[in-house]
Length: 448
Ligand SMILES: [Zn+2]
Image (tube, rainbow, N blue to C red; front, top):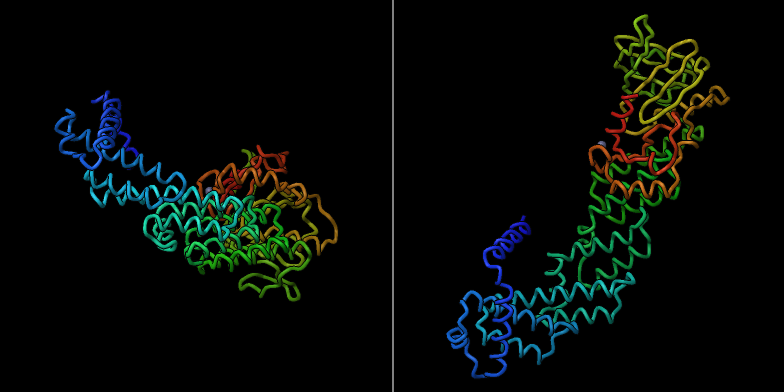
């Protein structure tokens, strides 16, 4: 808003006073020449009286001269004692208010500091010599490095740390050495670890979401991904809410990994579900059954809200309106997407069961139970290997959506999604892969 306001003011001034810029340049060069030739005898009041320009123009010209001299003095990234003396002289002679002069000086110092810092950090590290150069800049405005950095960091410095962090975390991987160099540089600049962590907090969370989405994309949490995630929680000293979210996601992905390897959880018998003695319960969750019925008038879908239970030999759906159970042997094909299991029973229309779980564990447990019980492969229309999205595609898709849901811009619970499902002939290409949050992905699945 501030920038727009300034722009409007500037544009209006130019419309009302089109020759202003040219005239101002004249005042600047006249005033500067007069100061140089008169030396100690220079008087601002005298100049104002004789030059014939408005006070306003002269005031503007004064500041321009001071700023030009500042830029010139700072060109070699330090202000020498001689330069300092000249600047002082100009401030006094031109009657520039002290506070304003200091502010302009600090502004120039900050700009210079930013340039030097980014040069110094080009290689990702801050050497002792480079730190010394920065200290010189701080001393030029009468501050210690620590004081200066703290002042600087209240303004654009945090953006700067974030910028370096973004480079460290490129491609969803936090390079170990890059992070430790950044931490070392932060320390050398006289900032605390807290300063660094709070500056990069949001980005750190984005990085974690990226690693999580990557892990979810093939439903497999590799051991290295798990290590990375656990390390990030400690490195960034995340608060309990974020840490819990990640731990929950890790646990869910671990369950999926184990299910794929035939290691299935065994649960307590859920109350109210007719489980036979000796039957092992692997999964139980609130669920909605979308029942397809073929009527004379056409297809009809009924929804029943209840629970789904997966045991070592069947799947049970139970609700107040309608229940069914199916032995694994009677299932002829199945596939799973986000939180949805599609089952084709012998001589029955297809069924969809949507679970209310946060993570897509239902299908992997279902698959694992089925495989263990049948010891055979069923026809799988949307098998895991086909769903696998290559890493470079994931990378580009993540960039394209800036780590946000394509539908609602949410930045948590993100998943890579096939626009056209693999089962329907969709491919693993950039154009067919998008980033969706869990909620939007579920909504999309509803539209099957
Ligand atoms: Zn969304």
